[in-house]
Length: 468
Image (cartoon, rainbow, N blue to C red; front, side):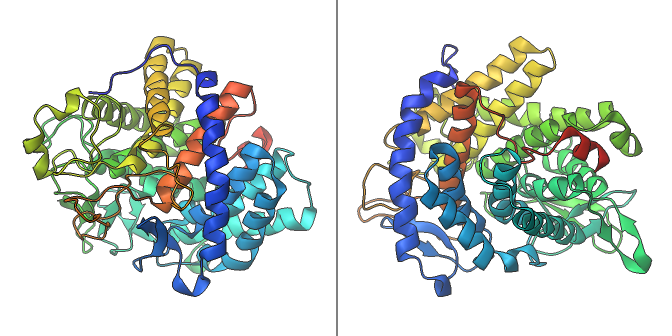
């Protein structure tokens, strides 16, 4: 169980965060110098060098977005130029990519971050450049929303690359693409010019995730433990009825793949933040604020509590809470995670994503007057991030292109590198793990310095959010 450090403050992490940015700068530049576009987007490292893995192109935005975050944190102009030029010249295909459910990953990390910086006054405001980013974000949100499967009895979800039967836990974090497009005043146009609300689809997908992906200990099945997450939920495409849980990257449908858990933690917390900026009237057509915030909060609390209880004492989880080798490790939850063990890999990328979800949920609760409850999650998130900023998770070797070590991509498929002399993957990095460590660090850095909140809709005025 995570041992929450109650005395950590955001400012306490600044020395570690500054060190991380110093290491990060060299790694961003190293990847840019060695990367060949024709090889595809870098995904994870093998022996310390980033390689591509053809499955879906969902990590390109993290590559270029990392340079933008580097500029955001340090003010070094060369990283802004790097992120901006690559976004302009290489991301257009991701804006109109109708074959993936990852628009929030690719396009909010690039176009979205650049628009946010412009709206915050961090970079010069050029009207044509601004409109270029806005158009890309509007299109991205609409394309994402068009991957739609209806559910029996109403509602629906953005289906995964597996097809219209498949709801992935991951996608709730990609709802940020729909949120920004809606806030910018965009709609999806359907057959016969039917106007489809992007906010409506966002909320329907979030509701489906909260209902089918997350468990609440209410006896739904024999393995119903509060906060457990199924990576994939399967539906009958003939009538839209729910059929069963499944897992693509976890050990089984009845165990919890911890990165999927982390996506839900972070995605729900982010949407609570976003919706808190919208007027009550915008939520009335979808059940009202109490109902909408209620199901998002229930899912966020359940998953964050599950993470705290089912993670080793330092906050770094193993890749799946039901991974079979864990039975050989004794009381593994009572002590820090062991990335070099012989049985099951840890997944530091899940920790990076989860740390941000915990911090965001804690701050949201505090702002709602639930100070003691909120402080627990906030401190949990800071505890996890503090550990990630230390060795052996922070990559300090100059010839290793990764920033966050001991990340896992797809354990069931055997895609992760196992070093010579080891029995399980360790010592490697992923593009999403590196990006989310940077994003979590920037979030806390801004908290410590009193800067504006780091939110994906940053800089968009309340008036625009209301009109959207």
